Length: 291
Image 1 (cartoon, helix red, strand yellow):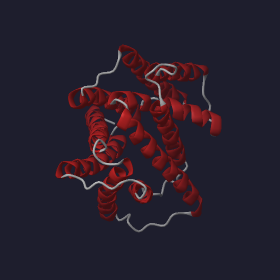
Image 2 (tube, rainbow, N blue to C red):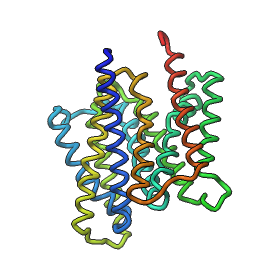
Image 3 (tube, rainbow, N blue to C red):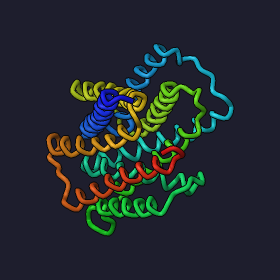
Image 4 (cartoon, one colour):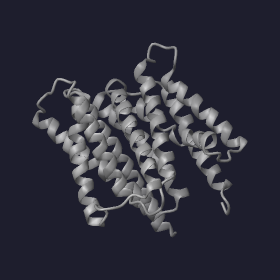
């Protein structure tokens, strides 16, 4: 890869993380007025339609799933549904930056789960990084304090569900279309939210909320596309650390839109999580053959 390709890829990754964080901001605003599952359902309609168009353009709208991939896609979809519900429920009641900071522990959690469930080799340096990273998470959620409640637990639950999603994704065969899998997941989330919204009091969305939901649909698909392009354009070692720019976006948007700014301990915990995550990523790369 050339330096210019890596630079473009890094910019794409930052754009992707901006898209995801702006989507989170739109959903936090919408759920101030609309019930959670109604908001997920309405966003899911827009997301599913956009992904269907993308699959059509890629010729992936009609695809066959190998028998071995069916169970994997089912587990991946379950992880995505659980992560969506847990994350957005936590986001309704917690500052944007705090929830986002907890999610930054994902690379550490995936490494831990890979070692425990897939038998992947993890050296002592990465074990220490994982322990330090989760200590950083504890600084963010601070169990035993007044600020720690069931929503903090849901944020941690979202991490667990995303780990299930990511480990399942690793098991997919190379021929499976990423866009098609994303479409299946989006439709499943939409259907689950539609069923759950029956038990909520339906609220007719105001024009402003409709605009936010449309924006959220575009932003989440745009974030997905930018990240895929980034990973295909540049070297993973250069591009992957730019995922953490999502936390910077969350800090800025949380302060500008909601007037929230994290406490010093939260910032310290987030810095530990990000630092250990980047270290773990580079150790994983060094441990690979030829790394």
